[in-house]
Length: 235
Image 1 (cartoon, rainbow, N blue to C red):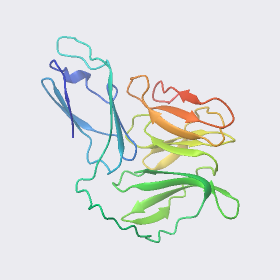
Image 2 (cartoon, rainbow, N blue to C red):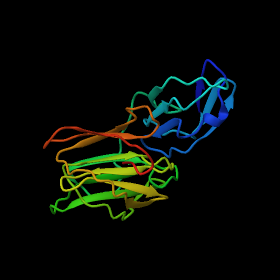
Image 3 (cartoon, rainbow, N blue to C red):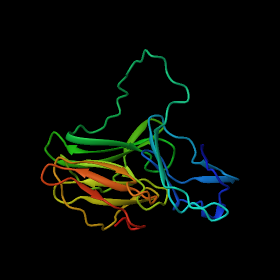
C-alpha cells in the first residue's frame, strides 16, 4: 500500500486515477483507495521486485474546505519482500527465446495475470527483424504472436498511456514509431502519429504533473523528443 498524508482533510470525491496518477513499469496500474481525514491510502496490489513506481499528485486533489493540493511527484523502486542472501547463483532456465542483436527488452505484466512477461525487439541470425511478446505462465514463456511489427536498433517501453490499467507498448522504429493500446492482452495500433527514429531509447514519466504518462525519446538522426500526453487518446 501507499499512504499519503495531507495537511488538511481530503475531499474523497476529488480522489481518482485522474487526480492521482499511479504508474508502474511492470504491473497493472488499476487501484482502489481509502480516504480517512487527511490520509489517503492507495491499494494497488503487490509490486514486482525491482519495479519502478511513479505517483503524481495533481492539483485536482482538494481538501474538504476547497483547498488545492500542491502538485508533487514520488518515484521509487519496489524491493523484494524477503531479500536473498548476498551470495547469488544465476542459472539458465532454458527458456528457448529467439536470439536477437541490435535489440532492446522490457519486463511487464502484459496480460495482468501477476507474472512478468518479456517484450523484445531486434535482428535474428537470419537478419529478419522481430518484436516478440513472450507470455510467462509459471516460468514457461510462449510467443503471444501479438502481431507487433519487427524492428532493430530501436526501443520498447511499457506504460499505461490511456489509464485503463493495462500496460500499453511504445515501439520506437526507424521507419515509423507506434503506440499500441493494450485491451486485455490484445494490442491495437492507437493511430497516434510518431516519427521514425534510429538507435533510440524511450522512457516514461509525468513531466507536467497532470497524472498521465508522457514519453521522452532519444535518437541518433535528430533532436531528442518529449511527447506530452493530453488525454485518453495519448495525443
